[in-house]
Image 1 (cartoon, helix red, strand yellow):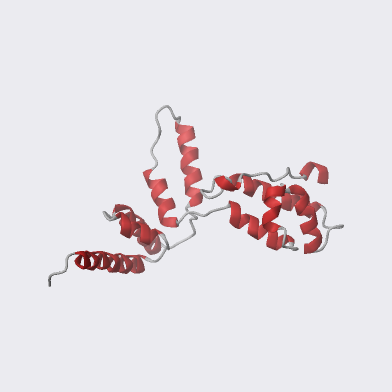
Image 2 (cartoon, helix red, strand yellow):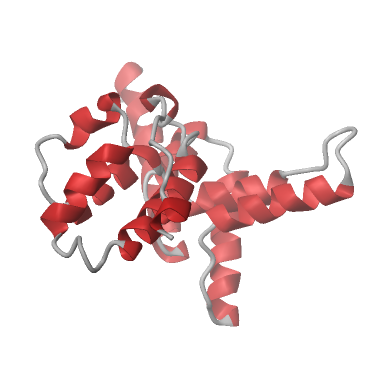
Length: 185
């Protein structure tokens, strides 16, 4: 059974990981790896032993990043951080809301694309009031005319109240900053 569940060697290009291009491949590999290790639970019982199994299923280039570790759980966490980049929820909601059907894209493919984007939004069960607040926050950030303020707001997801406070503070700071270039009070 363990031969059936044996994962392929993890060979991903680290340069494409910055934009999350390897995330799906890594998540699939990680799931396969965890299933495989589970089949070995009678013989491979410690985190150190699991680490030794793990290094047999990664490329030398990837091994360099975890070579100083000795624990399976630590290595998987580091690999997760390398390959899976989470989108800012505001930006993920914006991408979902702005996605339109492409020319010559079937309705089925368009729907699959929307479902994939929705997974990146990290939706959770919420009350109607919280859902309303999140929608307003997403629309607020998306609709801002200042790219500088929007960029700063996308650095950290906050409540609607905190987002609007940060936006008004940044707006005031940008106005005040212009006065430094034009003294004459």
